[in-house]
Length: 279
Image (cartoon, rainbow, N blue to C red; front, top):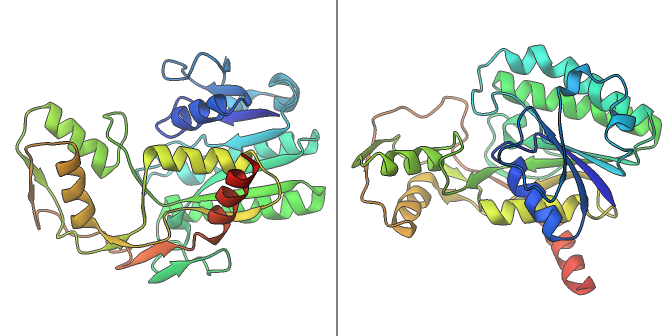
């Protein structure tokens, strides 16, 4: 199997590439830069949107895992809207050229304000430019893949816990704060409950999803349970032995963040169970 991974130099992409390579998959990794990409991959630095025939250029991959996305943590960025047609055009070229399967990184922010467990039939009402753009791309690709009889996987990510500086999540910011020697971290009240997944587990779930073709459609990359934000952050600080105190109430909650939201993990559990049986 030959898998093309776009956005391979990103915070999430680099980990997924490593996991795929560890699993023995042939990986073509692409991004603007390559300083964080595992050098076991076939690396091609490129601007995806300027390639006339990406399927040929990247060596006719069996699967494309599209993780490239600018300003993922800046939910109000107009780049989400401006670049949506470019993402769609790039993936259409891949599909039209004959790629057998397309997998794309999604986000729980496609859902919008919702309380409870999310499955693939949960209605979407996104409340940010980021969520609107991701949801639009999902709907466009569902139609395109159906018309072309191309297998389609939408990997809906939730909240990822990683302990590296290179990221924009609250956990990366805490790591940055600790490395600066600061003792306080401005925080919300932390009462919202979200679905958290450790970085390594996230990368494994994504890799396992694209390495199989029996389960397609929307796949929640999640833990399947909610946890209070304050509890998870406090635990993260303790796990890493940081001497940091949270300054509660310094920031308000985002108005479009749900009070309690988590993923239905039925599909990912089926994928993981099948892999265990195969091994």
